Each structure stands twice: as C-alpha cells, then as structure tokens.
Image (tube, rainbow, N blue to C red; front, side):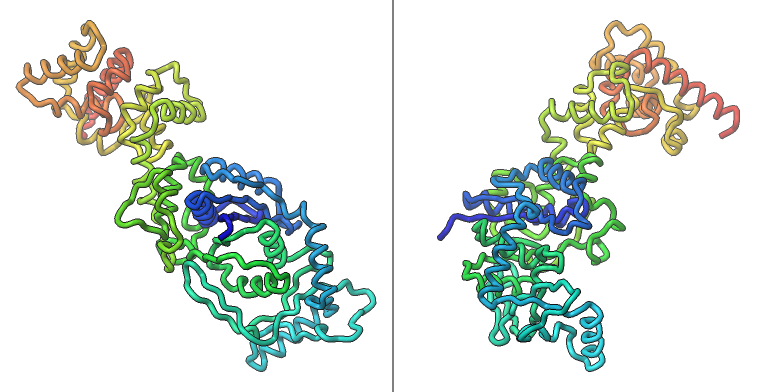
Length: 473
C-alpha cells in the first residue's frame, strides 16, 4: 500500500472559514496518524475572484492553527502548462472535444429541457460533430463522459456511492480562455501529487463521480474519498456570517487559542468514546475517518468557550503573560501603571473564557474606571457598608507591608472588631476597587491594585455611598 498522502486545497476567494479549517485538520491528522505527507495546495485558477489577501489569510490561518504542511503551498496558477499538456492528451485520444455552442444556445436548450421536465444538461451537440468549428467563437473543451455504466466508489464516511453515467453530462474541463476548470485541475493535481486520500466537505460529493471518470480516462489510480458533513448553525442552516464569526482569524482576534480550536473542531463531527479534551499527540494517535459522523454538526460557541477556558487554565505562564500583555497594549494600556502582567494573568487565568475576556477583567488593575456595575453598586455600596470601609481604609493606610497575607489579616481584624463577616467588607471592597462584584480573592486583588489606588478608590466609593444616601437612593 502506498504511503498516505493527503491534501488541503482551498480557493483564495475569501477568508479561511471554520468548515475549511476542520477539513484541513482532518487531512493533517490523517497524514500524521499514518506517518504520511500533508500537502497544501492553493487552487487559484479563478483569476477574477482569487486575491493575494485571501492567500495570505489562508497561510496565516494555517500557521496559527499549527497545521504545518510537508509540501507546499503549491499554486495551481504555476501549473497551467501541465494542465494544457493533459488537455492536449485527452483531445488527441478522443477523450475530450471542443465545444462551440454559445451561451445563448446552451440557455435555450436548458429552457426547453425544463419545459419538458427533463433534467437540464448539455445536449452533446458538439460531441460527435465532424466539423464543429465556428468562426469568431473560442471553444470550451468538454470531457467525453462515458454514456453507459456507473461510477461506484467506497466513501470512508458515507459508504458506497453509486451514480449512473447517464446522470452525468459532458462537463467543461477548460474554459474558452484556456483556463482549466475545478473538476479537471484537481484530478491532474491529485494524480501528479500522488494523493492517496481526498478528504473534503460533502458539498463535493456530486463532483466526485465526474472526477472518477477523468481519473479513469487518464489511467490514473483512484484516491480514496472521504466526504465529511458540513457544519451548521444552531438553527440547522449552513454556517454563515449571520451566525457570528466564521473566519478562523476572527476567532484568533477574539482571544481563542489554537489548541482549543483544534480540539473543538476535532470533536465537531468526530468522537473517541466520551473523551472531550485531547492533546495534539492524542489527536494524532486516535484519529481515524471511520469515526467521523455522517450527520451535519452544529457549531456551539459556548462549547468552544468552555474548551478555550480549559486551555487558558492550562496555558504556559509565560505564554499567557505575553498574550495578556499584547492585548493590553493593543488597547493602549500602559502596563507600567500597574502590576506585573504575569501576576495578573495568574490571578485571572481560571476566570476568563477568552484572552479578550482576560484583558477586560485586567483593566482595573492598570487604569481607573468611570462607573460601577449598576447592580453590584446597588447591592454592595450602601450606607451599611460605610463604617466597615472607613475602618479598613485606616488600617490599610498604616499597613507596613502591602501584601496579600497582611491585607488578609487587616481585613480579618476589621470584621472581628465589628463582629461581622468577611463577605460584608470583601464585596463592597471588590466593587470599590474593580467596579464589579467578581474578582480574584480580595487580598490578592488589593495587592495587585496597589495601596495608593486602593485608598483612592475606597474614598471614591465612600463618596458614592454618601451621595446616594443624600439622594435617598
């Protein structure tokens, strides 16, 4: 059996979407599982729609996801001479022919077929014409599809597929300008690159019988096909922009980690028992196409966030610090105005589902805020808290060392003096120093905020309580 060779072959006509990335992941994992080769091919023969920006986005997305190619990127636009060589071969062997039918003629035939409730298709007018040349018309080249028999192949996901050749028409394999079409170019590519396994979305299932016939015409070995089901939104419709971010780089920019995205996309249509979290090594060890589900999979952002939070908790401290620092700087935050980012990252790592959220929750350590969370202030910044807050402020001002253990002792002494409980002072302090009621442990939070900012914010909170009492709120 030949060594496994898979390929991911996106068209650079837009962003690298989630469905494409999952296909790339499956191709990459299958090659890695079998010790094979993963090829990246850029299918850029659509000159009007292909852009360099899209190529760059594909390469950047693949790099971020950690899906390193063993070969490539290989560009179809660099292989035009090879496609012409194979076209000439098919023409010489009578396996393809030039078609001079105009678009108007083709449209008229289809309209007539529809009127007769016949499946619209090319009527093969030029297939056996003795001399079809027409002045002033640049012909397309059509593949001479077999008229009898069936195309039968075993799909590793969908099982046996059997399509009668009389369901297939003579597809165009080269346009009038000489550019090869998708169904032809991919066959030549997969043949030349010795691809053994074609893993792609099931929207390509209808293309496969046509491609199988071209493989056969070229006496080329057939790859094994595996068509993975599409990804849909919660509403069951194909995933699109209306469901939220669909470009993999958008998820990166929103603070998702590549290992979380890999893990999530792996489980989106594939399973290994009840296991949810997989290391990269486990992904490679366990992945097989036989465990891919046939049904479409629904994208669940909450599940992705849950996985991302897991990986943030497990992240290397230096890496998490770097991500937090970059996020703060991107928002124009002066990190010199607050604690070391590593300490903040360590305090918040279990409280954030994304890096964006980690940055959001870090802001009060570095800069003042304009207002309190309304519900938190209403509940905790009340006159009943003023006496405790005034007392603790005095204790904080004279504290010898501004560190969590000493801060904790001061808080404990305060609540004991007032025969109260820690929560009665901790919650008002949280709102006072952060603007919200949810922070890391209060002693850790206050150490990171710093003594000067803490005292200043307690004063502001006491002022808020006084003003609120005067207004009778």
